[in-house]
Image (cartoon, rainbow, N blue to C red; front, side, top):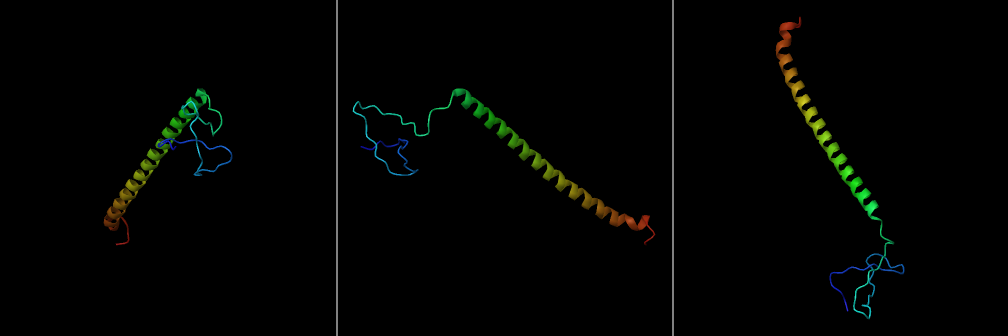
Length: 98
C-alpha cells in the first residue's frame, strides 16, 4: 500500500530514483530509515548555520562592492569624457597649435 507524500531512504545499494517496495510494520506505525547515516549533533547544525549565514553576508558584501566599483568606473569614464570634450574646446586658446 503506497504512502502518498512520504519519502523513504532506500537501503541495500539502491540508487537515487530507484523504485523500492516499502511495507508498513505489523504494529501500523511508520518507521524511520536512516539512509544517510546517524544524525549530526545539534552543535554541528548550529555551526553549519552560522557558517552559512557568514558566507551569505560575505557574498552580499562582495556583490555590493562589485556594484560600487562598476558604478564608480562608469562615472569616472563619463567624467573623463566630459573633461576631454571641454579640453578639445579650450585647448586652442592655451596651446600654440592654433
